[in-house]
Image 1: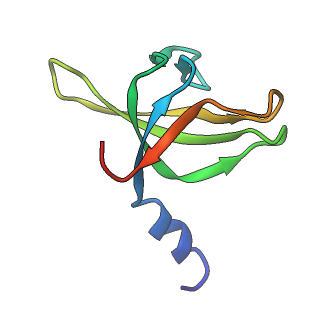
Image 2: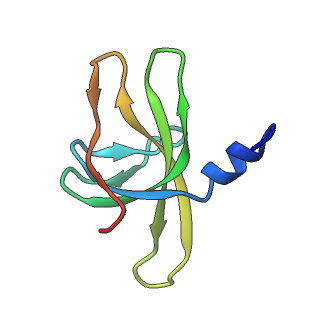
Length: 91
């Protein structure tokens, strides 16, 4: 693949994971998942300056079926710990 094609290709990949901590939207600080929830994450992974990593979490409203994306921290570089675990291609 050439140039930005890898980024476009990666943007179509998704994985399931389990939140090992409560997860919050990095922009709004709104809680979007509780510890133990099974979540859907979308690539790409974005490294941050403090060695943390962010990914987009995809959510669906339980009544309206509206889809939303939230940037969440999947690795905390300051604490050197994963905030999500048990990655898989199936729920």
